[in-house]
Amino acid sequence: MNNEGYIKTAENVLLHTYQRFPVVLDHGEGVYLYDVDGKEYLDFAAGIAVSALGYGDREYANALKTQIDKLMHTSNLYYNEPIIKASEKLRNASGMDRVFFTNSGTEAIEGAIKAAKKYAYTRDGHAGHEIIAMKHSFHGRSMGALSVTGNPHYQEPFAPMLPGVRFADFNDLNTVKALINEKTCAIILETVQGEGGIYPADKAFLRGVRALCDAHDILLVFDEIQCGMGRCGQMFAWQLYGVKPDIMTSAKALGCGVPVGAFLMTEHVAEKSLAPGDHGTTYGGNPLVGAAVSHVLERMEREQITEHVREVALYLEEKLDELVKDCEFFTERRGIGLLQGIESKKPVGEIAAKALDQGLLIITAGKNVLRFVPPLIIEKKHIDEMAEKLNITLKNI
Image 1 (cartoon, helix red, strand yellow):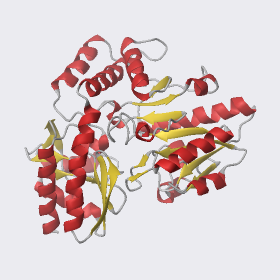
Image 2 (cartoon, rainbow, N blue to C red):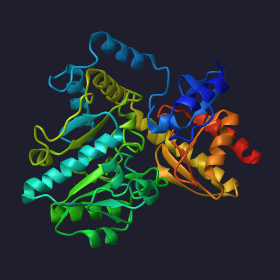
Image 3 (cartoon, rainbow, N blue to C red):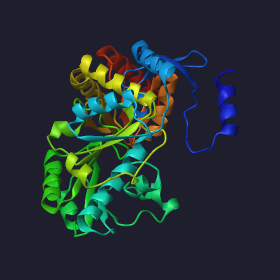
Image 4 (cartoon, rainbow, N blue to C red):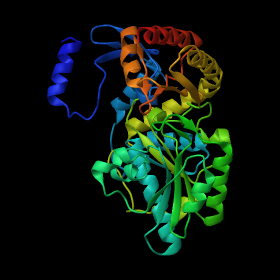
């Protein structure tokens, strides 16, 4: 069956919750993907910042195959070796103390919310606590995660949301300070806002929020689902700022394609929050995802991925700045590392769709930002190729 035939079948059987690009991807190699008709695409989307090691990586595949031949699932009623090793490596990479593995990023956010509320419940002896989140944030589409997502457009059809969530302005410390009261148990934010338009946090803002949390015994929660796992040039973006959270979430590149997320916390929070019976998952932390996470973390350390990101990101920024300068409807570039965005006065959905004709995969962040989140293994030659393909796309538009 060809590309068109598969799409026709999909439209008849899948729930229409995505505006998919008209491409049926079949396999990949390095930083390239190929559709069922054999067309090649340079990938600057990485499955929405997931495929950090690219595609067709034999070492990664063999690690999963070896584990599949041994054991895939046991449930959390028992220990398993791969997830114990993965937990140790993730703890070492993050500097946090305790790990809970989930199936996705949104589930990690749900766990972080519960941990923060249980911490305050243990401290105060009652429920009814509030959370401060950020406007224009995105934390997921389950009800708890959606409740702390600062975009009414996503929330309106599903109201009422989780009560007790108040929204401050990202990078405006005074708006955060104004919302703190005796009910506040946590402040949650993305270290770099992704879906909201690729907005990095200001260092002074993060330090100010950390100080407010320390002064009021409020937990600071960092969402590192998209910006973490090496994408910003450190294993986690908050490490660039020197501001450590009490709870953090991770997913996407954590498993490089295997569906896995995690929330982590300090020992202080762990001692006073989730206890046996408070939280659980059937699949989370099974041997298969443990093998994936352990391999990804080992590879990132061995191959010095964060150092590579810092080096190649400077070249990407240079090329994107040239695009902004040369294109009359591009207004600004912003981002950190290999999480970059270009703001556009023309609809970015149209640009991303037209880029397919040139064999380029790019995605958007909101309605007016082109998002560049390639595999972390890209080289300068791939950035040159991307810039050439995008230039042709822009000229055609």
